[in-house]
Every structure is written in C-alpha cells, then in structure tokens.
Image 1 (cartoon, helix red, strand yellow):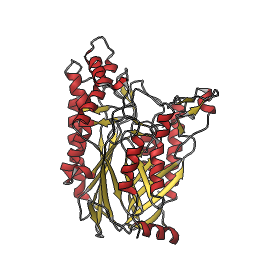
Image 2 (tube, rainbow, N blue to C red):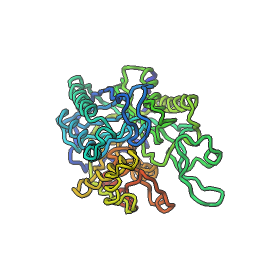
Image 3 (tube, rainbow, N blue to C red):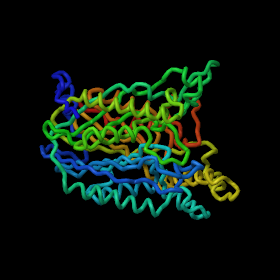
Image 4 (cartoon, rainbow, N blue to C red):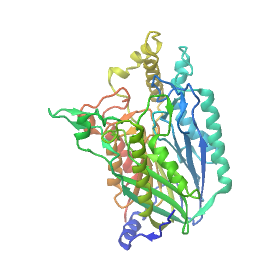
Length: 465
C-alpha cells in the first residue's frame, strides 16, 4: 500500500491555525505523547436470529462475518474510545450498556465513548428495553438473543481493554477524501405531477422513475482520517454517507458492500487497521444504481473500494498537536403522530393477534417512551484533533445534517458519523418534514433540526481571537 507523504499547503495550515486558537473542552491535552491501539471482534449473530428488528425471515446462513472495529486514543487526559459495529442499530438501554462496558474496560467515562452501528439490514437491532417488554408478553428472544448479546459485549469490552497493552505512539494525522461515483442517491424525488416521493429505496434500480430522477442531495465525498507514527500509517477510518445495503431480507447475514469493501482494503496492507463508518445517510441509498443483484453488489464494493484507495492517495499529513473532547446533551421529542402514541403502542404489544413484527415495533417505541419519561437525553459528542473533527450523530440523521456540520466548521476536516444512539430512527431536516416525510421507523418529532443545529454550535463552531 502506497504511503502518502504530502503536506498541507501553507494557506490551509494558516486556516487550521486560526481554528486551533481556542480550547472548549472538558478533557483536553496539549502533550506531545499520543498513543493509539485498536481492536477487532467477530460479532456475527447465530442462525435463526432476527435481522433489522422486524424482518420476517430470520438468519439462515452467513454470507460473510459481522465485525466490531474500534480504537482507543490515549494522552494525558481520559482515553477516547471509538467503536463501529456491523449491526443495524443499538438503541436505548443497550446503547447505554455498550458505552458503559467500553468505558469501564478502558478506564474512561461514558461520554468519551463513541459507539456507532453501520446499519446493514441483514444484521440485528439491539434494544434491551424493547426485549424486556417483549418478554413480558411471551415474545422473549424475538428481537434479539440476549444471551448472545451479553457475551458479545463482554468480548468487545475485553478486546478494548487488552488492546491498550500494545498501544503505539502517534505523531501525525492524515486527511484525504475522494469523490465516490454511482453509489449514493437521495430518497427524495420530484414526480412528474410535481408531488414529492421518498420512495427511492436501497434497490430501486428496477424502477424507471428512480433511475431517471436526479441524484438529489448527497455528500459525494468519502473521507479518510488516518493516524501515523512519523511516516508510517497505523490506522485509517473511512466515512461515507449512504445506506449500506445492496440487498437484504433473504436470511443471509452479511456486512454488505461496505463491509466487503473494508475487508478488501484491509487485505492491501494488514499493518494498517482499516475501519469504516456510515455517514449521516437516513435519506441516502444506492437505489438509483442498484437493482439488488449479486452483480450490483460487486459493483458497489468496487466503487467504494476505489473511493478508499483514492482518498488514501490524496491524503495530506499534519502533526498531531492536541486532542480535545466536547459533548453536549441533545433532547429530541417523540413524534406527535398517533402511530407512536403510548397507549396505542401498548395495545399493539399486548395484542396476541397482531403480527409479531408489529409488536416488536411497538416495544421499541415503548422503550423510547420510557427513556424520555426518565429524562435521558442523547449525547452529541465531538472529538477535536485540531484540523480534524469526528462528530457522532444519533439515528438515521439525514445527510443535510452532515452538510450542516461541514458548513459550521469550514476550515476543518469534519467526519460526520451517523447511527449512534438509534432510538429516533429517521431524523429528517426541516425541509423533509415540510415535504411530508413519514415512515414507521420515524420516531423523532418535527423541530429536530433546530435542536441539532443548536447542539452543533456548542461542539463545532470555533472561537477565533
């Protein structure tokens, strides 16, 4: 694998210097001693396990394994943990459990742990509160296998702890990006009669309207943030905004084209740990370019892999001088629709004649009601590495939020990652709410953009002299 050696231009270094002239962190370090360690754990679900929370066909075979990839950054302050999981979603009590287990095992605090799902659909949804509610009506194990999950979390936490024993010094950051061709397309389409449709799903390439419609609002850039010891790369984190599905629902467990591209990139050089995370892509799919065939899956793998390679070739290195962490609480409200009314959801959960999948969905909504009644907000964290920032968004945040984060920090290399705490499901921007976006996976209320915008200001906007 070619190791980039380019440096940032003088003008860009000046811009970066301006943005580094502030400190607004609960935990920061100006020491020169930075260290990184990484871990990988197989988290493949067993057979006969439900996928995507509500898919009727349970896992029948494993096409390729599911993994957790993560890293631990250390300096003089508290360690920072990043963990990306090849699962559809981790929500509510389970999301809290993941962060606590990783914090406890690495000697840090929960707010210094970022956990994200990649959101493949042939993978599980984990929600401890929903599973408890399902167990109370005789449906234990229908959402996920609690025994498997608990053992898996122990293994992941132990891997994070053990990896710190072999941490390596880092001196530089690498930042590179590349335009990815013919993967992402927005769900939103303007139909010939002028009406708005959000019907372009992950495999809409057989629909002439979906193919003919413009790509729509996307972020075409795949971004790669890398960590280096002098001129030797140690780890690369790739982020791209698209739903990561080519096809699903056949009972074939898979990390899909994003995981397959990541694995192919890893084989280029096993000395550099390759990690992938999905960007804010609640409204972005491969539907314009994908018909759901094996051939199309292979093509998507190739295009994403090419983006990773090109971003690497475009990488510019800069010394790592600081590691700052900021976090703010984000309070989103439950959607006011009768569809997610608490009493209605309870009736569905207890209705023995209702479909199991409908009762699962009701349990997930009820678990969120419980969370909100307990006044447990979402964390919106930012790891600030000077010229680069990592921001973790909740749920299926629409791509507009990713573009907004970049607008707020125009002189930084911002990696916007989606699918953190996933209880909100889809989080449209004000535009999509105004266009009438609705879905059974929509729990967040209108007005979410205002709240997220204000939260981003607290963690992103630089205070220059």
